[in-house]
Length: 287
Image (tube, rainbow, N blue to C red; front, side, top):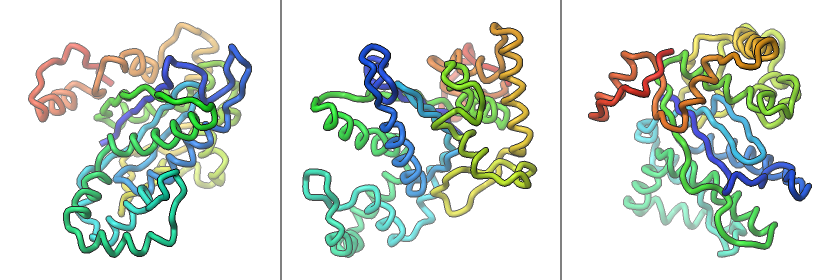
């Protein structure tokens, strides 16, 4: 299943970009987030479909498969987990020479393997290990303590391909909507900028593939080519320029995102709610 995730800095301060009040530039922290994101997406049961890292928050669209870890061997689980949580000296410095020893210890401890397998299949744990090191490094840089990110993060299930594409578009258009970029190519720290830069023109006709995957087999759930997706984004940009009050499906999804936990057509929403023994369809948003 796909999810749209959003996490904000405390007080929505400009802790990852240029602080408008002080003029301090924290753009390098956006690079920290992207680097950690790319690493963790290779290790957990997720695939990265879209991202945008803004000055005071970030958006992700992930495909999440909580069952994939059950197919991993014990050795693979341990090897992945030790890349997430390697031995350290207590001050954050990795003890690389201790990794082989710790690996052997874990392989002899079924409980440790089961714990690692469970954590690698947890979206909450994924977000914890994405945010916690960034917060620690930023606090060290600022010579302060306390929260860097808000503790909780928004998570909305995307139940249909239309909802996934709409959310990806909303995420990729963040810098343009915030008026800090004029074009997709100028939209720094976004998945669409990365896709434009890494793709050869011939690949525009290929279906959109995940940017990073921790799954054994990547699935092409989205029957949409990069060329078509780019056309959708540019059409939304043009529509907003013509009529600033116009709302795309992406914007409509985002407008209820603070409250709504799933997005899709009515049958998909009813199925999702039924699986969770929930009844409330008041905030359902058909796609």
